[in-house]
Amino acid sequence: MIRRGTLASLVVWTALVSPASAEVISTTPGVAYLDAFHGTVAWSSLDQSTGGYSLKALVGGRVQTLPVATRPVPFDVDLGPAGDGGIVAAYSRCERDFELGFGVYSRPIIGVGCRVFLYSFATGRERALPRAAGVRNEFSPAVWKDRLVVFSQRGDLRSPVMLRTRSLDARTAGHRLPAGSRGPSAGPVDVDVRDRRIVFIWQGVEGEPAAEDGRSLDMRTEVWTVTVGGKRTRLARSPADGDAPVIVSAMVLPDAVGYLRRSGGPYFVRVMSDGRRLATEVEETAIDVAFSLGRTFTFRRVANGPYEIAASEQAPPGP
Image 1 (tube, rainbow, N blue to C red):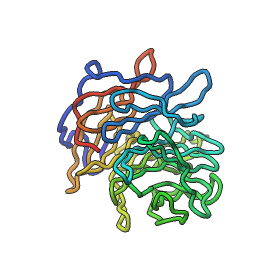
Image 2 (image 1 turned 45 degrees about the vertical axis):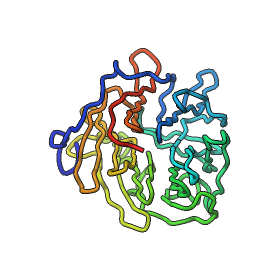
Image 3 (image 1 turned 90 degrees about the horizontal axis):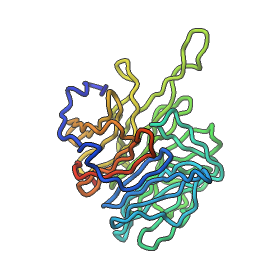
């Protein structure tokens, strides 16, 4: 259920094409997530023989494995424009990785000694970005030209997670922005940036472990938008109205911010600049979704088969 209304009260402005009519780009045996920008798509692909994830991309209509080291967990990859007009991928790599998931549709990934790397599709090379002074972990990055948005910790895994923005090569901590609610296992699920506007999804748990009273941990997910130097606004929260839908896949579109919400079937919800809420019903098998150049890219599950990365021709306007 959407706050301040229900899905039935939202305008369903287009329906995505059926799974059967979508083009399958690639497959992978392990669940992961994707991102897209200006026709380029990136996702993590599991190698079952090693247990590691490689970073793959659709570039110019061809799938390629990017020449970067694998990770034991899926990449927290974000695509965006470089300052020179090219396309770059930002992601973290850690000395030790932990995947703190609450299920197949959630993806808080954190580690120890994490830092951000930037891969240039123009040069085919990656480089490590300098970690801000006094910061031990930097992860879940998003990039837009010279701007880096990143979650960070100054101490160990128990220290607060902070949202910061800075220039790519700055060693200063940059500007601290309001993050989500504090609490057990609280941390980011996804983040995206476009110019000065940022949207992120924040996840934690409520309640206590199952005990004599029967209570158990419940997932709490929030969607926030914030502008650099401006205020923070919460767009959605779960659980709400008695259900606990999972919210993933935040993105900033040219005229809106959006997120994928699973509640009685997956919906992609757009929150327009004037406050209107528009919803697209996404195919039931969708785990993650991204839009670019009039196409919808979906990471989806397949019964008795590998996961698929698929593309269809109908989509809201995207980067």
